[in-house]
Image (cartoon, rainbow, N blue to C red; front, top):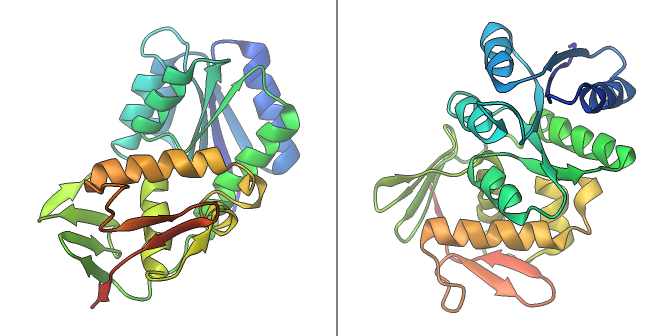
Length: 233
């Protein structure tokens, strides 16, 4: 299978550097470069892609809007490029469904590793063995990756769902930080504990779970996390 990569950046030199990185990872890949958000959305509508690398700061529609519109119709991995030290940009990118972000100027080896991790995560998604999971007010239909609380659908980003899925697959077992990072993000991320903490926080918020009196995700300080309570069908 030939990998199709969409790169969206109005700085041509940056786009070409990312494209070169894509070819370093996958020599036979097809790379399409869009210089603005409108072209990106048009390309995305015309052909399927396997990875999107998307800059935030572009002529309208900006990267945030493009990410949001792509995520409405696809679970394709999205890596967003943000300006150095713009924490709010990173948070907003994750809220809109981006799978990862990298700050400019970026290290090219880190870029290659993050691109590989995103594609590998898509290719080796864990098979569903038990479809229905419930715990208290939480229910998960793993066949369609749908999460409900008290019958109401909870909107999770692909990474938030993947993290929850790993936790419920090992319900009752304390999982180390490195195990969770390796399963959800890939080997390249096993030291990025801040990633994990941020996503656990976001997951708890969406599930209405209190970290001080958890019903679902329990913290094992200095080690990892455990999903408490389970019932499969």
